Image 1 (tube, rainbow, N blue to C red):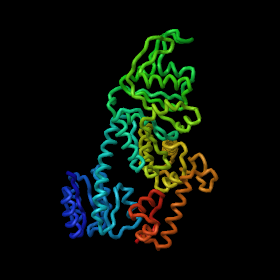
Image 2 (tube, rainbow, N blue to C red; image 1 turned 90 degrees about the horizontal axis):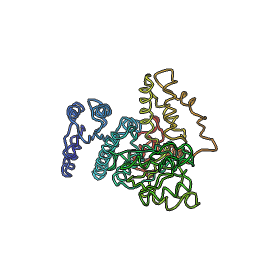
Image 3 (cartoon, rainbow, N blue to C red; image 1 turned 180 degrees about the vertical axis):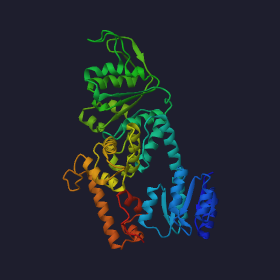
Length: 447
C-alpha cells in the first residue's frame, strides 16, 4: 500500500485529503506543523504532500531535508500563494510537482498514479544501473520514456536498432538493454563497424582460419563466437559495406556461418543490438543499405534523444561529470553556478553528452577557484554563444519563440502566473516547468 504524508497547517485541507485518499486505498498520515512533519519523516514515505508556508518556517526547508534523507520519496509541493521564484526553487531541490490550492482531487489522483509509475521506473533504472558501469543520468520526460523503452525492449530479447546523433550515449543504451534482458549474465561484446577497415570486417565479425589471408598465422574466433549466449553490439552498423551486410543478413537468418577461409559451419545463439547515427530508413530507399537487413535489425527501434531535447537534465549531468572528473583526477570538486548553467543551456551541443562531458572536464581542471562562472564557460565553448548566428538549430529558434511568447503574456497579465497560464492555454504547473526549462530565474512574475 502506498504511504502518503500530508504536511499542511490548514485543518480542513488535511482532513479532506486524508478522507479522500483513504477511500482510494492509500495509507495517509497528517502533520500540522513543520516540526510534526520532521518527526514523521524520520520514517520513509512513498509520497509527501507538503505546503509551502507554515507559522514555524518554510516547507522548502523540509523539502530539502526529505530529499537528502530519503531521495526515493516523491515530494509534491502545495500552495495558494505560489510565485515562479518558489516553484523554480522547489523544482531545483527535487520537488516532483507543484499544486495550486484549492487542490483538485481528480488532478491529485492522476499525479499520484504518475508518481507511482515514476517510482517504479526509478527503481528499475537503479536496478539497471547496478548492471553496467556508467548510469544513464536524467529525470526528464525524454529520459524517463527512454528508460521505459529499455525496460520493455530489454526484457523481450528481440533485436533492437538504436538510433541517435553522435555522442548521445547509444552504447550505454545497448548495455542497458543487455542488462535488462535474460542474457544479462552472459557476454556483452561491442564492435565499432566504422573503425574497422572493410577488408577486415568479415574476419572481425566471423573469425578466420589459419592461412585464410596474408598474416593469418593462426585461427581466430570472431565477435559472433565471443558473444555466443550473450549480446553482440554492432555500433555504426550503417557503415558496413554491401558485402558485409549480405553476410550479416545470412547470420541473422540462419544463426550460422563459416569462418573466413574455413568450411566448418559454426552455429551461434546471439542477440544482436545495432546502433547508427544515420537515417537507415532513408538509406534503404536510396539503396545504400539493404532493406531486408534493416527490417531484421529494427525489430524494435529505439531513439536516443539529443541533449538539446533534454536540457532539464543539464544540472544533473554537469554535477555528475564534475564529481566524476574530480574523482578521476584527484582534484577538488568545482561547483558550477546557476549563471554558468544558463550559458550552457544556450549552447547547441552538437556533440551532445560526449561534448558536455569534455567541456565539464576542461572547466573542472582549468578553473582557478571553487566555483565555475559564466565567463569561464563562454571562454571554454568552441565558438561564441551568438543567438543571432545564421546556422542556428531549429530547437534554438523554438526556444526563443517560446520565451518571447511567455514574456509577452507575463507583461500583458502584470506578472500574474495564473492568468498568464490561462492566456497561453497551459496548466499553471506546466507553465512553471516550461519556464524552468527555458532558464527563467527569480525575476519572473508572481501572483
